[in-house]
Length: 199
Image (cartoon, rainbow, N blue to C red):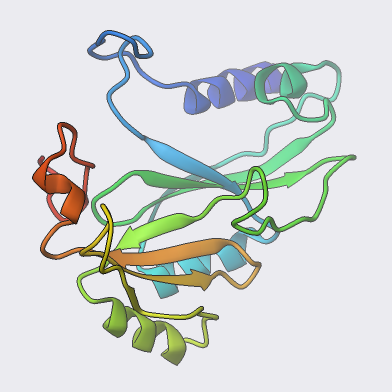
């Protein structure tokens, strides 16, 4: 009974909600709700996102497993014996949420993708001042890459970027474009921005 309730709760947590539909899109698609990231140590990850980045913890739940069937494989595409020990959701200012997963699985791999790897990814945070963000991150002993790098040509001209890494290797970015970007002058579609979340 407990497994059935846990499975139903997990399915509800992972699925989206319906909304307004438009042509050539998933029916009811409204926007990006969250990015899920599997982490090696939940406490370390929550501490990093809340005490360094400045996100706020919203909720935690779990564990989830199906020791008798294939629910985990059927729902999530993981090994049937995979266990989600804990899920924690954090909110980071204006923007979509981040969902942190602590998994164990018989076939679990411990690989940290580079940005150039297929399936590699990064999470970007809009900041008011990339140089101030770098000074702050340096003061917290967070590994940063070259930058701040101002983009001066092409459609992204107007933005400044800086890549940095979480202690376990997750790639992150600080980005700012206080006066917008060059492409906006002629674009039919302008990217959503947390600096103006209502647009």
